[in-house]
Amino acid sequence: PEGGSKGTILPAWKYGEGGESVFRHYIDGLLDLLLLPHPEIVDYYGREEILFLGPDEGTADLMNWAALYARRRGYRYWRAFTTGKAPALGGIPHDTYGMTTRGVHQYVLETLRELGLKEQAISKYQTGGPDGDLGSNEILFSRDRTVAIIDGSGVLYDPDGLDRVELKRLARQRLTGDKFNQKKLSRQGFFVGTGERNRKLPDGTIVPNGTEFRNNFHFYPGLAVDLFVPCGGRPKAIRIGNWREFFDKEGIPRARIVVEGANLFITQEARLRLEEGGIILFKDASANKGGVTSSSLEVLASLALKDDEFTRLMTAPSGKPAPAFRKQYIKEITEIIQRNASDEFQALWKEHKSFGRPLSILSDLLSDKINRVTDKIYRSPLYDDKRLRRTVIRRHCPPTLVKRVGMETILRQVPDMYLRSIFAASLASTYVYEMGISAGEIDFYDYVSNLPVRN
Image (cartoon, rainbow, N blue to C red; front, top):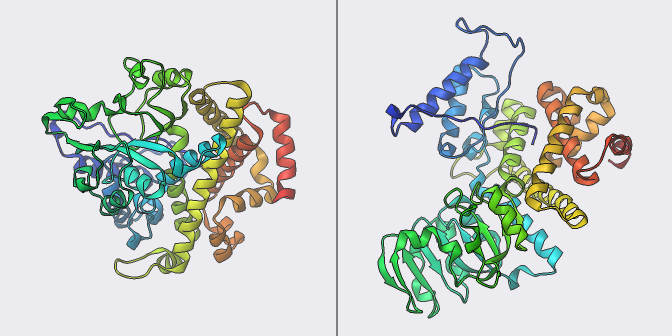
C-alpha cells in the first residue's frame, strides 16, 4: 500500500532448474546495494535505502532464508527485510491466515449485498483447488453451493453442489481434488483426472483427453452459475480469441459474477467483452490486495517494536502458543484488509453505477488516481503538519500496536522515509475512496481540512 514494484529475476537458460540458487544470488546483490559504503560500489544516491520483499511466485519458501541471511550480512532492518515469514521469526504467512483470499471474498460479499443475494443461496465454481493458498481459503471462507473445482489433478464437478464438509477436509489438509471421496457425489457428479483418456461422463459425453478437459472446463456447457472465482489456473485462460465460449448460444454467461483471485487469468480485452455481455467483473488488481496489505503491516510491526519486544510479542516458535499481542495484531490486519476491500469496492461500484463505465477500466483509473495523488502528497509540505501526520499514521496503524507502544514511539522508531510513504499512500487512498475518481484539488483541501476533526 505504501508503494512498491515487482522484483523480477530472468536467469540465463544455462541455470535450468536452479531457481533457488539464482534467488539467493539476487538477494546477495540487493544487500550489496543496501549495505553501504561498499568498496566496489559508487553511491550516487547518497541516502540510505530501505527495501522490504514480499513472497510471490516461487519465492514464498525462501523468505525465512533471506531474512536470516540479511541478519548475517549485518542489515539492521533484517526482521522487516522479508514478509510472510514463519511465525517463529515473527512473520505472518499469507496462506495460513488467508490474507489474499480475505480481500477477494470481501468483494464477493459486497457484490452479493448490492444484488440482494445471500451467499448460501448462490452457486459457484472456482479454478485453483483445495491444495493451494487461494483455493483452499476460498473453500474455507465461503458458504455458497460450489458445483465445480478445477485444479492440477483434474475436474471435480457436481451440479447438485459438492459436499462442503468433504471440501473443507481437503482444504484443511491441502489435498488435491482427486482425493475427494467420490461416494459423496450425486449421480450426475464426476471427477475427471488429467491423465484420463476417453472417459465417459454420466450424461454419456466422452472426454478424449483429461488434461484438455481440465484446461477448458471454465467453458463447460453444463456450467450456469452465479459466481466464478479464479483462484489459480493458466494465465490468459480467457482471452480475446475465446471469450465468446463463456456464453451459451442464447448469450447467457457461465457465471454472472466474476471476482478474480488469481493474477492474469483473464486478459484485459476479454474482461471488457465479458462486461459488455452483462457480467459483473472485478479484476485481480483490485480484488487480491490482501497479501500486500498483510506484508505492509508485518513490516510496520518489525520497525515499530524494539528487538526484544518483537521477539516477545510477535514470534511464535513451533509447538508453543502464540503471544496474545500477535493474535490480536493479526486479527486487526484481517479487519483492515476487509475494510480496504469494502472501501475500494464501494468506490468502484458508485462510479460504475453513476457513469456506466466498465469496472475493469475503473479499476485502472482508480489505481492511477491514487498513485498520482500519492506522488503529489509525498512531494508536498503536508507531512510537516504534525497534527495531520499523527492523525493519518494513527489511522493507518492497527490499534493494538498504537496501544502497546504509543504514537510517539512509532513516530520516533519507524524510519522517516517509511513514515512519509505511509502518510502519502494512506491519505491518498482514503481520499480517493471517499471522494471518488473525479475529485479535484478543492475537494482534497476540504477533505484534509476536516480530517483531524473527524479523527
